[in-house]
Length: 548
Image 1 (cartoon, one colour):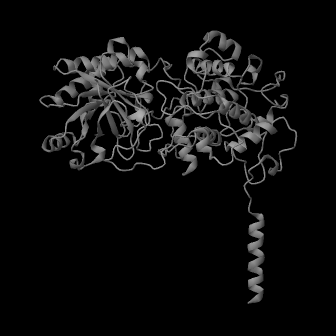
Image 2: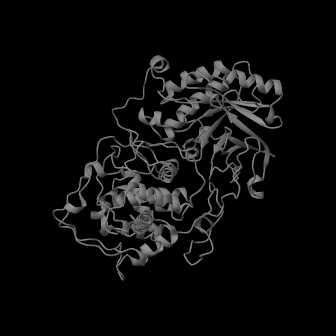
Image 3: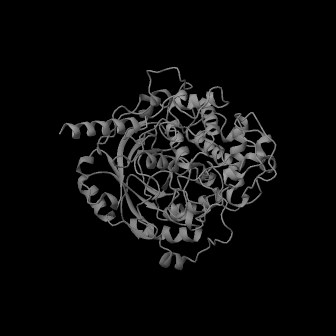
């Protein structure tokens, strides 16, 4: 008995001694020497909580950074806001990894592959990293954004050594530039015959899957395998120690430009923005398609975090001071993104809290629903309003009529919306006719709305995301509703709002911006819209602004 206990004790002691202890400072990692060029950057990144080591003992500063590590870094740099784990990818570990990936997808920082994978262990290039940082800066409202960073695209392509091609990128994690015009494959025909569209081009997905979820999963990349460079095979390339130290290009360094080249419009803006903020210079152009090491990534990330935030019209967070590493008492969230609500509002009826500025001009609160809420009890919403999905594409919502009857019986003012999957004007006409038939004879006192937003089905079927195309589709649908004697409105998220041209300026706008989606109100968009959808937690909630 004593021998057994002794062996058990020894086994337990060995197990404890062999369990890696997470290092939290530069000096605790065995493979980080003193006075290395990257000591300051890695130290700052560790203190800010941006990045972890590869295990409890090693940081692996010279290894290429993986996609999932980049996703977690950007999620942390945004303050780890409350977010919905959409579990987009089958190859991402559930939990924190999946949450970080979902955040980066929803905010447009990164994207996945058409085969449903994220490829979390793929290394990323310096150009990938700069492009993702550019997307993060837009999402987090950092200074020197699109307006200040625009330069001549041809010059950037020449300086940045980026081939001039309009083909979609096959590299992972390319951000969707805000207000950019997507470059689509010319072989995709968007002039589908109306009858074919109505009968055989039904979107093959759950119709409510993208129902008011904000920025959707953007999967423009090819699902073909990447021809990545083997970092260990580049014997001719000297290691680059920092952004300021530039080496001559190696003659025998192999670069697969075809599979690693982002679309020029996005990458050009990213490089211009990076130049403006000291993250890139023209002499480093030959390094753009090479893997970025974990040490180099730390240098970039720390510089990115130091950029001050700017207050913009679409900003949902207050101006924050530049984050510092000296304050040990404050958490990472408090230092960088201090507007998270202390208590998440998970009450589907309670509109939630908001600052005095956020609640200014708010005159009424309500929800919007579809068949995905099932046979919902609307009696608690007497005194509020309800916006009901009438249908999508050419199909009525299963609970549309029933929800209208409930509102009328309870005296709840209601509005109606239609989710559009149209790829062009001819398809929009078919949808508009279906919408008109569905709402004929009803009295939606809270308005009739055209739901215009991106989704994976549109992306996979050649949707052209330009002002011209989006405005033409929207105009076709609004014109049809106006023929009924009804003035329609337009629903969209903030990224799509600039896509509507002057001919649509007079239509009421209903905008969505979830912020950290904690169920409370963050932001006041009364100067942009008449109605604001501020959360989907635990149900889509809206505030109606007073027009007085």
